[in-house]
Each structure stands twice: as C-alpha cells, then as structure tokens.
Image (cartoon, rainbow, N blue to C red; front, top):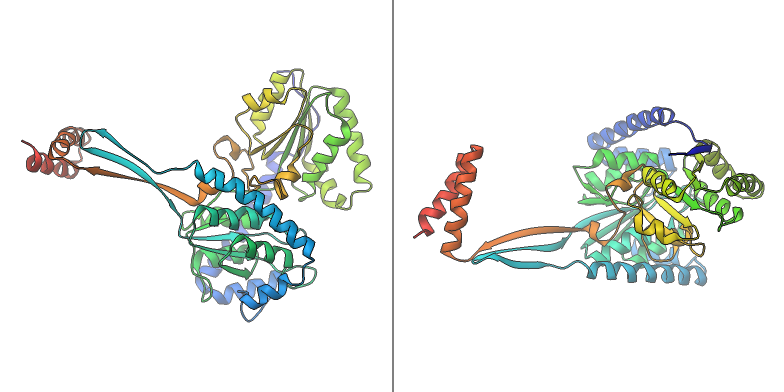
Length: 428
C-alpha cells in the first residue's frame, strides 16, 4: 500500500499516560460516592461546578420558568430538530418486531422486544451546552418505550444557573425527571442512587474524558450505550471537492476539544496541500480557534493515497466516528466501507447536520469501536429476550432424549436429570 502522511498526530503512547491519570481520578470519585453517598455528591458538585442547590431536581414550575426565558425561535428550532429525530427513531423501532415460530412440531420459540425500565441520560455542558444530546438520548429512549427517563446536565459554567435550552430539550424530549448535576458525580448518582434519584438500569450519553471513564468503570453495575471518547471526523475527498469545504468540515469537529482527531484521506496531493493552507487561514478568524487549532496541531492528520482502494482500506483501518465522503463516486465507499459510526455522503451534507438537526443519532462509537458496534438508537434501549414453549408430550420427550445425551457428553449430570425426567414422564 502506497500511503504517506503529509501530517500526522501524536502517538498512542502519549495519549495513554493521560488515560491512566483519568482512570485513577475517576476511580477515586466513584469509590468516594459509593462509600459516602449524597454527602460526597454534594461536595463534588460544589467543588467542580460551584453548584449546591437545596435540591438537584428541577420542579415542574422551575422547568416552565426556565423554558419561559428562551426566545420563541429557539423553542421552535428545538421542536423541529426533535421532530426529525423522533420520526427516524420511530421508523427504526418499526423494524424491530416480536417473533414466534414452531421450529418442530410441538416446540415454539420466540423473542420479545422489551424496553429497559429506567434509563439515565447525561447531557454534557461546559463550554458547549450540548442541547442536541437531549434529543438523541432522552427522546430516543422514550420512543423505545422506556418507562422512566431521568436526565442530568451541569449548570452553565458562565452564569451558574441551569442551561435553559438544554432543560427545554430535555423537557420536550420527554424526560420524567430533570436534574442539574454534572460530571462523574452525576454518573455516580444515577448508578448508585440518592435520596432524590432512584438508581437506573442503564446510562447513556456523551461527555468529557472523565464522564466516559465513569461509564466504563460503572459498566456491569449498570448498562451503557457505548464508550464515547473525544469526537472524531474523517473526510475522504478527491479532486471533485475543494479545500474550503474540507477545511471547514475538519475544523467543525476539531472545535469540540483539544484532543478531537480530524483526519483527511485523499488521493490528490494538490487538494491535501491546499487544505492544510486553508485550515491555517480559517484558524485566523474562527472564534473557536483555541480548541480547533490545538486539536488540529496535535491530532490532525492528512493521509495521501494513490488509489480509492487504498483510501477505502485506510478508512476502514481508522474506523472513525464520523466519515464524510466528498468524492466523485461516493457510492463506492458507501457500498464497501465496513467500519464507521455514521456516514455523511456527498458535499451537500456534513457532520453538523447529523449532530444537531437532521434526525440520525449523534452518539456514536469512537476509538475504533466502530469495528464492532454502531451508535445509539432505539434498539440500544430494548432487550431482545427469547422464550420457549413445548406444547406436546411427544416434543418434550424428543428434545429430552437429545438433550440427555448431550448433557452426558459434557458431564452435566444435573442437567441430564432434567431432560431424563421429561423423557420418563412424557415419553411413550
């Protein structure tokens, strides 16, 4: 493979040291909360978010007062985006169906799609209040049929009050309870429970490195959607695309944070060089250049290939969260790529559409997890549970005979006894 790097990001070794430190910090916080409960949560909220209300949960009146602060246009925009997310989620759910089949005479097998009972949805705050994450988690869980959805988000770090647009999105999305609580302490509260919060069965939603690590450590005690690390974008482009579009779309995701990989794969050296120049030009005026520039400096990559086959192979190796295909023949990549979180096909779309408004879910696999999982969708909130029913003596005895012999092969004599009892009781 004739692949070369015109720009390469930092090594995996450099990032692992930071991951170890994060793991230790989060482990300490979770242990503290598990031991001291609500007292620890309150201390952590005051320490990290300067937030210590009488109650973390917003009352119905507080929610309405907060929503009342928003411009009508913002409310309309939130509702429009949620309509798109809801419509697509409902169509996805319709693809799931219960089944039942008689596999042999007298033996009926089936499965039922059963929603998770209680889900906690984390909606990040910080520099960027992630309003759209409420659509993706809260609304999708309610479409799936989850009975109780609680939602947590931190206070606005600039104003020290609940983020109005995020609260509105949680409310319109169908959250049953809304808490102003952020960070690892929110994850711990949802997992372990408090005097206000019932422990949940599953936690979903993106977050910073500490939130993601908390989900990793809590997995097993509760379910999670996936481990979402820093956001990633891969732009696959050829000479049919232009440098302004590639640069804009790379920086659009790089602005998420200083460790967000933004990668370009191309078979055009001219486009690659022009894009790098254009990125430098755009960073001079981009208001989020402090974040985007740091990400591009440390994690940006420009990979030059000779053929589209090499571009495809490299893209599958990277297994990026977001993959934009800006090529003359995008269907080649659509038909042949196997490792990606979501595809954005052609110049008329982009990752921002998917992140904010178009209807697909923006909680997606990162760090090569796209090799084995897709992103958040209604199916993540639904357990596909099997059942069996044997309705005739003959079927019970027939299966029992096979089962008995197979149990003996494995040495499971208690299992064998179960089978033998059915053969004895229901056989001729």
